[in-house]
Image (tube, rainbow, N blue to C red; front, side, top):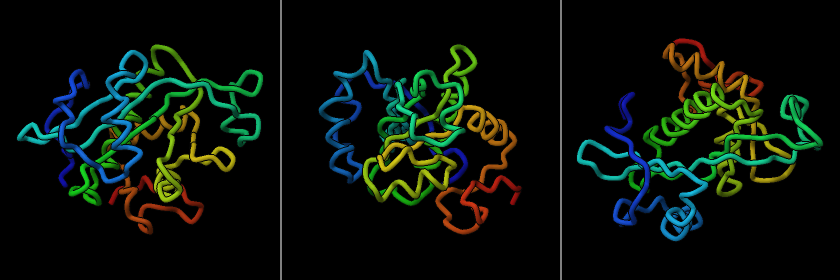
Amino acid sequence: MSSAAWASRLILTDAQQISGFRCGRSSVDEWLHEKALSSKATVRTTLYLDAEQTLIAFAATTTTIVEVSGATSAQRANSRDGRAVGFLLAQMGVRHDLAGKGIGGAVLRDAMRSAARMHEEAPFSLFVVDAADESLVEYYRRAGLVRLGNQLRLATPMRKIKALVNALDGEVWGNITDRNSSLYPSGTVNLQRR
């Protein structure tokens, strides 16, 4: 997929907008079709459309309070009483027939940009992701997030997200779906120009 993974974005307001969409993960598909609309007062669901205005992906974001008492020192920075405020990528899905084409990475980067913009207006400590299942933990880890205990929740400090977004704007983002070339041995994202 090109650097423009989608043609347009819009906010979910009507069930017709998501009719027929399936990412293939039952928990994610169920959330989108059964809970996304009823959650719109507290969760923003962004829809990503192709040139034909067909839904190809979505991301649902909100804020959250994160228990960080057992987390890394970076994750605990700016926490109060063992808790920190975070920008949460709560749900994300790519249409099942488009999996592996880089759309998920592009949606994740877009969510990171949204978090960085929001952070300028109302600072918070963490960028947080809830992985749908264990198989996605490694995917998010390659994007620079660190697991919180043995949960399916991962987080990284906003200062790192803001640095990453600055690098993104300079077009030096590595392909996080490439398990080898985009990672340093430590497992962090390689931001060198290709």
